[in-house]
Image (tube, rainbow, N blue to C red):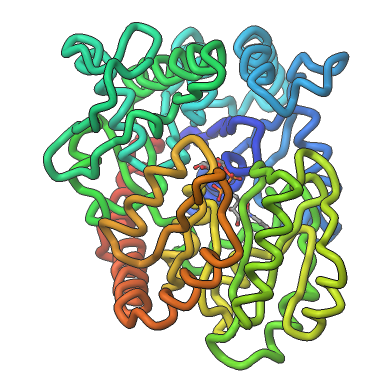
Length: 456
Ligand code: UDX
């Protein structure tokens, strides 16, 4: 009898990473691969608390956990200290975990590690233990092409050894790709050079880990950005994951999703509601938060707004005076929403987003145009694709005080609705995305070849 293939899937412990990796894991399980999913203990507790008993019963994955080493410094879990600590403790902890699993399950030992490139050193454990190595890049392919170009950028004097741009020129990786503005590089943090150096080193580790893997899975489809894909050896685009039918895991979210917004959406006219959500980590100043609220009010449109309890510098926000009363009926606010179901709802007209890659793929897979307000990391470059390459959205611009004003918000909402091409382009991309994940499509075929590789 064939050995049952058994994959250990290891995401970076953050929402934007667990979400796509758990989807991939569900897809693997539905193709007959046994999957063990390893979270840090801290994240696993959150996931289990957000899951219903029914979800737990139906989950096809085995959930296991390891210590992130920050039990006595929990405050560091919100910053770069987390990655620093994981680098030190994770290799040993995962090796122990794999040995434990193999010991308790000796008929079906781990045969492959599928690791997030943000914790790519995990693949060294796989090398050491003689296991197959598959990497996952949870952001867009263009942002993975960038680390592959670091040596050339240093050699040609575009950046220095710390990743700091030399001069203010725009950076061109290939003629066909949008230019990188030097302040938008994924490691860029001009106000904090220590953080920049740390993030730059992380980008180098990403490159190294990607080269160490046999395959690099990516949540996109080849035709969406063939130029970037062509620049990455071993890339296997298998998405967009949100376009895959019936792949909507009920697990993996760190907070319970407030589904009252779905019944509220049911009562709204078709194509009438702006969905406003900025992912899991974006924070605003109280002043900027007020301006956003007033911009939504000024637009005169209905809105469904995700306001996390830590969205204003880590705390609960305050709303402008009487804002909630004035927008009663046309505004619905929740702390955490079932985002994919919302984007699939016919009442939603556009997605006011920070352009995180998951949100980008979710909006694109459902044919929803974007209003873009990127915040950090890859989000600026994702915005360039949304606005300049795919032409499915508009970007908000800062005023001279460094604020996005309520008037800018209203103007861009008006422009998005009066520009007729955005929705048409978004619907066309949605169809292309569906084709790629359905039988015969490029991502479908790529996933089949992944399964063959794992079963070989
Ligand atoms: C981070 C980075 O910001 C992003 O740029 C990178 O590409 C991945 O890691 P995050 O900021 O959380 O992720 O944004 P995003 O990638 O959009 O992921 C957020 C996820 O949370 C999405 O899958 C979204 O559906 C989900 N979500 C968000 C909810 O389920 N409910 C909500 O209310 C809001």
